[in-house]
Length: 156
Length: 117
Image 1: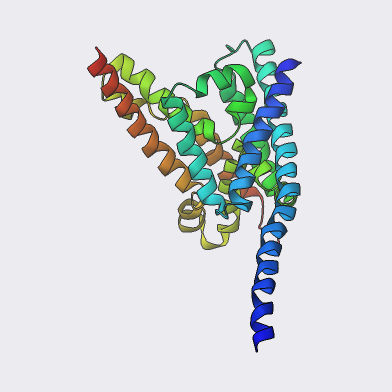
Image 2: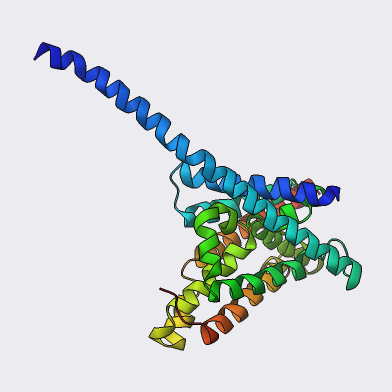
């Protein structure tokens, strides 16, 4: 008994140590993959911005919008073809965090629920995943905007 | 060329932060995305996001946190012109392209494609 009791803390220590080490080992390659894919998507977005600035006479500060729109179209297309989800499995946050991930979540929800009909299925579920982003983004932007305007009003 | 490098590094870093939130802090993807969006709005409010955009270009405008910043930017710009009500009328001004494109082409995708197994 005594021996067992003595061994238990050691085992626990080992388990704790193993727990500490294990997710780190898994996390690092994931983070690296997210960095690479996310970086590549942003580099491609920069290329698109430059195209819109140089060939379509967009202002530098406005070129992000059409570039995002092109990324969204491509993302919806690749989602429909089933390619995006394959990449996403490898890339993790690398494909989820850029705007393409937002478009992917809308397109995949729309495609997935098509069998439930266009109104209730596609229309009703389109924002199932992207909804929280819009809700919290809009609400937090509203709060921050009000605070900024208040500070401005008080400050003169 | 320099712009591409910064876009890659900053965009990649933001995605890496997202991955850390999911893997290390065990957040769901939805929680990660909403946190990033809220962070973007707050950084925009502190005046820190615009310098990042100027510096990293698409590296800052492509990740989802730029959505929060863009919502704030639209609201403040319209408030400048029309007063307080502008916060409501302008909040989707900048993000219109992103949201409408996502809805329209998401719908097209549902029309054309069938679910994959």
